[in-house]
Length: 165
Image 1 (cartoon, one colour):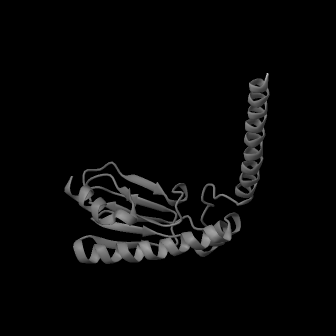
Image 2 (cartoon, rainbow, N blue to C red):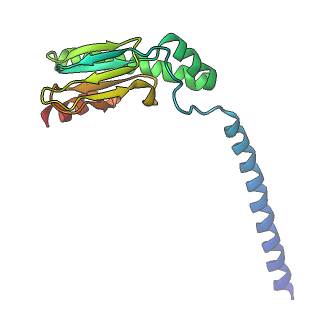
């Protein structure tokens, strides 16, 4: 009888501790849910197209109106972090391209929405910058193959893979 009481109290204590931790976890989930999470990137205010038919690295950034729209739907801490990341990743990528890939032309896609890549063999490809969810980035194009969106934090390796294929 004594052992049954001890087991009974242990089961109740375990049940209470589990329900207590789940209520704490629920509180944390509510705090996380309060932070606005970025969804799809808002549309830009331009509809121009830039044509690329030569080996290049095309850097894109949001226009000023699009940047304000992104800021309005993104938590301020996340927004500032993203802008900081974009600035330093783009600066590093430019430096890396100039140093290791001087034959690749750097193109700044400002105030445009579409980039039309025209390879030598045909099969043009149009990239809608509004469809790319990142606020900034770089697309590489060798003049023959399909363009590729590369990770700026790993640009040295990505460029080596793309241009050596």
